[in-house]
Image 1 (cartoon, rainbow over the protein chains, first blue to last red):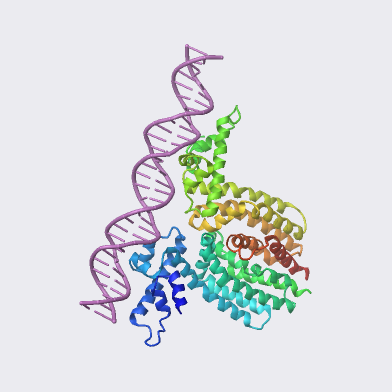
Image 2: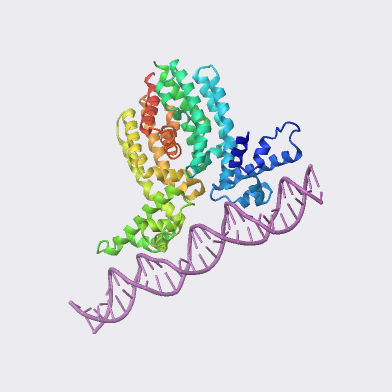
Length: 229
Length: 229
DNA sequence: TATAAATGACTGACTAGTCAGTCATAAATA
DNA sequence: TATTTATGACTGACTAGTCAGTCATTTATA
């Protein structure tokens, strides 16, 4: 319990976050104040996402984040320790929920063709067509300069995704639905999704790219590779 | 002639670049001065590549570039109009040569299995294991904030690569070596390469990724998809 | 060839502007 | 009233780009 406090004090504002999260303090639900406080925090995160994905981390001015969130700049520092902290919590908040979604798909017993379709659909609907696309783009573009964030993302998100996808592929290979080699590189399955995210940011205006069609084509090609045997 | 002067004044230093490039001025090869000048320019580009890929565009200080190139800061402005210009010329110089290489591979008449192997090999040797990897990473990470550079890259490099790869795939499909669908998305073939570049910058220290093996596996899977029919 | 004049590459101190983070003060709430 | 939350003017550190002056190299002249 003491530990909980220490941890959150490190990542966010000194005391408040801890208090808010531990707000199940025996009696009395979230007071009006606490609710308002959570709203503020969320408003800041929303504004930050907007600015960061439009301008990148370095070029984003906290003055602009504050303006967009309709608060004063100083208020940001009541909720986040500094600019980098804000960035990190933004990524955490947006990407952590994906893990469960993927693991759920993996839990289904069904032919790979079905699971793969679901994964593609999930990716398009829950990532590509949402702000999460921008967060992943931020991870790609800024991650290198924030080793801590890259580590967090790998440990808390990516490794779980890789593991889940690998498990799916292994089972499918055992059933002869794909080559076992694919399970060695789960990244291959996701690669077109990543490419689509990068492409959409850079080249869509010259040559639009249909993510869903590309990913479906890719999956079909990979699956076809074992129809033979 | 007057035109030449105007054009180069736009992209690089006011006058010098034009003079240097048009240095076939009738008689007398490159004088000592001109040779030295070209060396300087290259030294700046080398230093800039180093700094930009280590810190990103925004965070790179031209003071540091100058220090690394062992010149004074002001000298940079004799060779490049500004920081962004330097960045753009760096990308141009490094990536333009790739086009020819790829087109050469495409010109070979051989089974797709052979061409694909060559392409993978070429990518690993000429891109992934060289500084070009860093330049492509820069393109990915910074391109969004420099629409002009993204456009240049698309027009002068990427579109040619896509076209060349697509041609290869179409021919192969006609011969029944792969599904014709692959030619609709040449990006699929290159996707693992891109993923490897991103991965190597962010997660290699947690889980190294064997690019060559991954790309070879991918190609095998895609090719296997038509062995059947 | 020897000397003087012209060139232009190079320097680095300086300017003008930016922005993350602070803190004294004010407003809101209990 | 006492305490918590919010404000935004302010500071200090930082850096892209400038420019007046230096000096090595080249060209013109005697």
